[in-house]
Every structure is written in C-alpha cells, then in structure tokens.
Image (tube, rainbow, N blue to C red; front, side, top):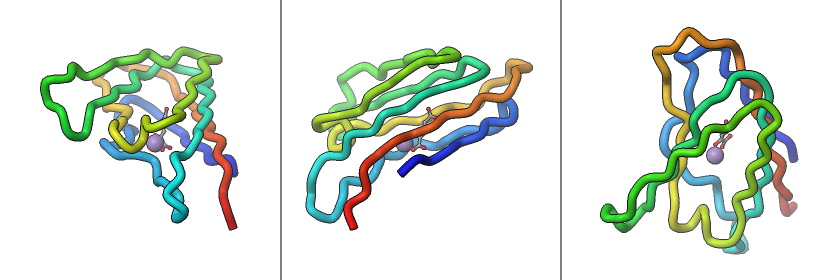
Length: 98
Ligand SMILES: O=C(O)CCC(=O)C(=O)O
Ligand SMILES: [Mn+2]
C-alpha cells in the first residue's frame, strides 16, 4: 500500500503517533520517500523520557526506512514550522496483510 501526504505549507503537520503494528503483532516495515520542501521528522521514545528526541531533516529525495521495533518503542511527528515554505509530498510504502 502507498499513502501520500501533502504538506501544503508550514501549517500542515502530522502529530505524534506510531504507525500501526498489524493484527498479527508483527512490526511493520515502512519505507518513506520525500519530495519538495525539507521538513523535520522528529522521533521520541514512548517509555523513556531520558532518551533524547531525534530530529531528522527530510530533504527532497530523502529515503527513510522504519523497521524492527521502531514503531513499538518510538513515536514520530512532522511539526509545524513558521518558516514560509513550499509544499512537500511524502510517500509511505508498507505491506498490508489481508
Ligand atoms: O511525512 C512524513 O515524513 C511522515 C508521515 C507519517 O508519519 C505517516 O504518514 O504516518
Ligand atoms: Mn507515521
């Protein structure tokens, strides 16, 4: 399955979440490709506040892979920004079990 996110400007964002672990309990493998404006991709640990948040700038053409236990232990977000920026498109690819 491919999902497309369009961030029209700095007001469009995605709040903290984890991508869903499928009903069989397996960790999802999610591949993400970004086009257009650079946006920050933030990660925070779900259970350990002392672990520092990570901030990854996703530039035009960036490829990000979330695999293993990433989505069991971490949440991610794409925050708003006050910068006057151009749109960004993000595609995520994941396998869906039927
Ligand atoms: O736009 C991104 O880089 C992340 C999007 C996301 O987390 C999602 O669609 O679940
Ligand atoms: Mn996500």
